[in-house]
Image 1 (tube, rainbow, N blue to C red):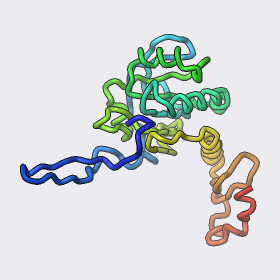
Image 2 (image 1 turned 60 degrees about the vertical axis):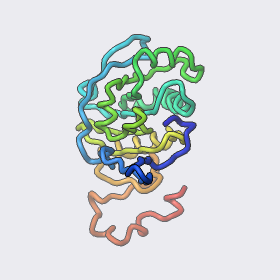
Image 3 (image 1 turned 45 degrees about the horizontal axis):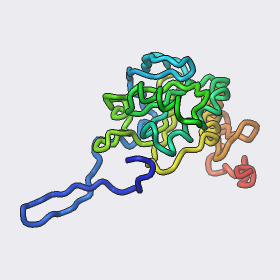
Image 4 (image 1 turned 180 degrees about the vertical axis):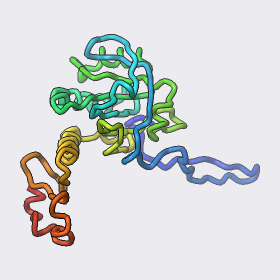
Length: 233
């Protein structure tokens, strides 16, 4: 399923030699969420666009670090380079927050290299691009479309303990928002450090909710601590 393909439920045809019955196929192999679970371990070939060399990457490389594993359907498609370029444009901001980025598709490392060399949007790319040729990594993260052999747009934020704290998965036709993802990373790091929780739309400098100290007073009275106008500002 490329990003120019309309979103449709998977179908399978069952024939009894007289009539054909079309039924919706359940994707039983696809996980609903990895949030609050240990991220799957992995190892695969990769292309390091920053150095211009082939390499290997594994989950061990990211132990003790904030990191994001960002799946995309395929090289040489249409929405995918816009997402990769957007993440790359914020690369220095992610690095300043101590967040490593790994982009992954089921393409080969050779395809990744050629994709980076030919796509204008990927000029000066700094990201490492995992080559999940066996499809085992995409399958382990629950984003593999088995019939097509490609991954959905899946993005997983993983904390230094190796636990997935945020997950976003969507069909190929619409790209993800890197600015919103940056905001979520900032919020997760702040909440993890302080023990406070971040309300909807939180950004640095805005109010948090001190459940670590005022949980009894706040129960049923959150509006005494923050207004809707403050939330939406």
